[in-house]
Image (cartoon, rainbow, N blue to C red):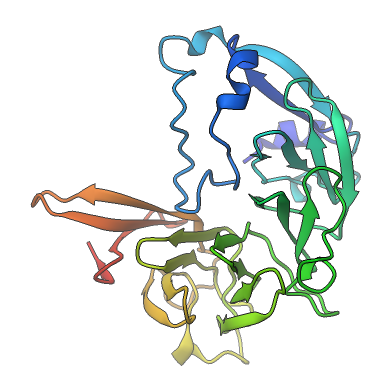
Length: 314
């Protein structure tokens, strides 16, 4: 969230991107664990296990460099935002801009290496990297871009496009890669594609509920966890008997079948979506039992905790 006063000032200032590194930066960069999807990992924890920055030295952080992407938004500032956490491939820092550019930076200097213009929004809420390629959510499905030169990798899907066949197919969250399958949350559908050909394995229509923020994956149980919005069609054209809105939904990644779903708000007309990527973690209950748990969060302030194996609320 951006305070209104701060947002207004963004009209006259270039949006810039600042990275801060520790005094240990040069000696630890190439040894660091990579951050290859915007949630850190597909379990959605956003947790780094790196030890160089800790409670004892965090006060020594210093500005290493500053990068400005050169774009000045002309529309209302509260409608212009970038919610994409950068990813680190091990050699390149990949960021996005609100004017539809995917940008590669030198992580040591902040110098721009290349930029590729795609149809926006580009990586609205994140990116995914795998095997030399960046998988970029756009309004044309997922675009596969080569890490080192920024060119579209036409060896994937339809000349580099997966999930787009000439129609607008909005994708907002970073895709998930499971072996040779690409799991994608389009605006109101979940689909699995084989790699590299991009052929559809299965698809699940969410009947008007949208996935705009939450998409995680539990490899242990082959379970996709999504959180959804309210319905696109609030009046008419919606079968409420097959209602996925305002819910945490668990899906079998092998066949697209719904394992279970848990609703937070019934018949929502007030934009009370569930938000953020579900967090998957092994936890110990007060009984001493260890379970594989999924956490989901709502705008109403509720936290849903699910035993993924049993498909039951904890």
